[in-house]
Image: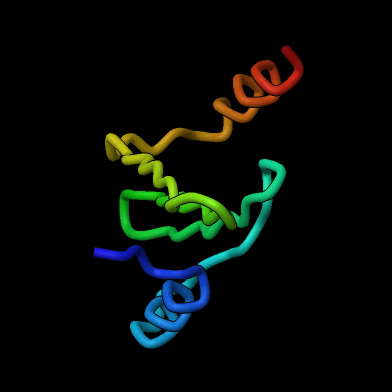
Length: 77
C-alpha cells in the first residue's frame, strides 16, 4: 500500500480539524508535529523515501514550576 504524500496527510489532518505544526529539523525532511491528549506525534516526510514517525506519550505526571530549572540545566549541558 503506497504511503500518503505530505499534501494528502495535511488534507486529512485539516479535514479532521486536527491542529498541527510544520517544521524542519533534518536536511531534506519536512516534519509535521501533531499534539493529541497525552501524546505528541512527529512525522517526517522525505522526497526519496517513506515517512518516519515517532510518538511521545505522557505518563500523566504534571510537573510544577520547579521543573523549569531542571529543564534549563538540561538544555545548557
